[in-house]
Every structure is written in structure tokens, then in C-alpha cells.
Amino acid sequence: MKIINKLKNIIFKLSPHLAVKMGIEFPLKSPNRVFLETSVFQYINQIYGGKQPRSNGLFIGTDKRSWHYPKVLDLELHTIDIEKKKALYGNHKHHIVGSATELERYYDPESFDVIIGNGLIGFGMNAPEQCEQLLLGAALLLKNDGLFIIGYNDGPEFVNFKVKAAANYQLFDECVPGQFGLTQSTYQFGDHTFVFLKKRTAS
Image (cartoon, rainbow, N blue to C red; front, side, top):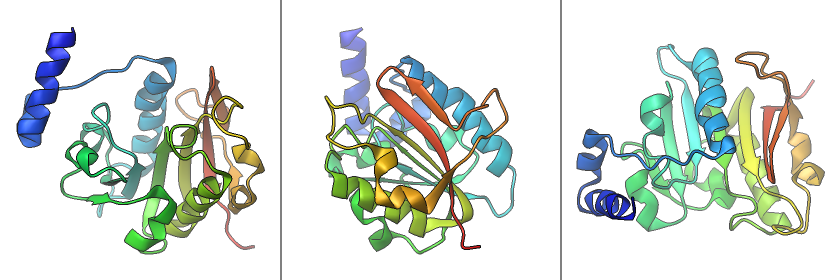
């Protein structure tokens, strides 16, 4: 298995386009990743897919396990990651090397129907101000009533704050999708949490 993964990595480094054409994947079958790639993606495709022009989506953070997301999500999917070396795993048509704490620098306000940020908080974005900036940026970029799906680890072994206690969390309302068995706004997988949020609009 290690040899196979090394070969996959070599192919991606030599030619990302060839790797994509070959359909090379690096599956991670943890419960939270399976949840994201099945129930969450099915819901997104049901609500936002099949439209012309296509709905705009943003996936924050790229790696070798997410390169195929532009293929499976029925969105005009944009990707962003702060690490230049991870650009090969982003959507080559719509990828930006940049920080998730400065989203408004790279994208126009109210330009996305859905934003997904998974594995950021607790995995590098570990300061309260970074969480606040991420939430603010997502709110600015989402269209009215846009959907923000955030997956994070905010246990004490990861960070010293709670995401739901952030001031900019109030820019959103938790929402229950109500399809594909998604009957809650929050899902817990061990120390990993997913929350479905809708941008709060002025009444």
C-alpha cells in the first residue's frame, strides 16, 4: 500500500492532469470524511446542482484527498489553499493560493451559493482571531441565504476556544437540511464537528 501511494504521489507531482485523467484517488474512510462525501455532497447537489448558469461553490483547503471534488460536486467549484504546493490538488480552472483568513481579498462579495470549510480550525487555524476572520469572510462572500458548511475540531487538545462562541458565528443561523437523512444542524464524529449554517440576512 505504501508503494502504491508513493507511485500516486509521483504521478500527481509529475502531471496533475494525468493523475486526474487516470482517476487516482487517496481515499480516507474515516466516518467524518464518508459523511462529507456522501450525505453532504448529495445534499449540495440536490439543492444547488442542475442549474444554468451553474451555482458557485468554494472549497477551502485542498489536499490529495479532495482533488476530485470538482468532479463530484455539481457546482462551478472554486478552491483555495494557503500552501502553494497544494495547488495541484485544487481545481486548476478556479484555484487561488491564499489564506482562509483573507477570503474577501480574493473573491467578490456575495459571489458564492455554498462554501465548504473542512479541517481548518484545529488543524493550523488555531487562534480565535483566525476563526473570526474565517467566519466573517464566509459571510461576506455568501449570497443572501447562502450555505456555509464548516467542519472543525475545537476540543481543548486542539484550540483554546469554541467555534460556536465566536462573535462572527452570529452572522449565521444553524439550519437543518432535512434531506438524505440530515435531520440535525450539527453532526459529531468523535472530536470532529460539522455544522450547517445559513447566512443571516437583515430583517
